[in-house]
Length: 168
Image (cartoon, rainbow, N blue to C red; front, side, top):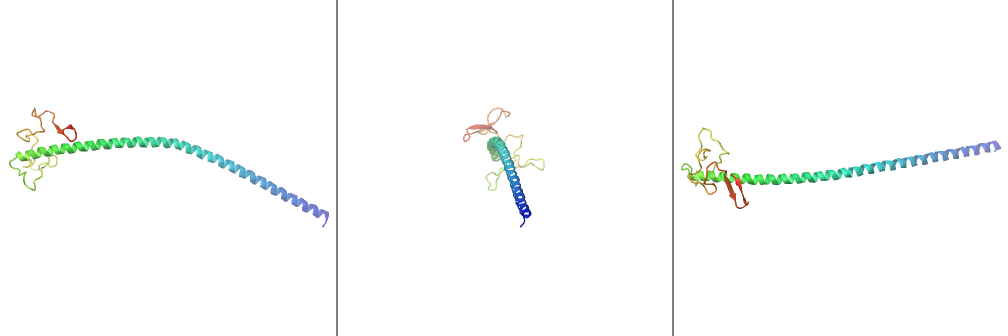
């Protein structure tokens, strides 16, 4: 081997080593830059999560407020349903009183059902035998739940179970 060939081999080895070092340095810088970019991206995600957490607290508070409103509305609805049931019972009692007084109604029959004036309407223009007229009094004697004053007096029904009165 000649000196010239040895020089070319050494130069080639040096060039290859320089290229390997350059590629290695470039690769290291790229990995460092990628790692820095990922750190920055992770920090952004953490900030977004923190902002979302404060929004989460607001949403949780709103959900609790809506739940409380719903429970209040549900309680009011239940109270209204109880009042309707009491009113229906009062109306049925009055219809039964009218049927007991009416000589055309057999209120002792097994198939007897009092008909509420709001459930059925007469079709022939005359009232049915079990349906009291709105203009006629339901009884000649006042019942125990009706006041003995004028008919336009505000009628109230006392319910000892619920501890109060309601309009009839």
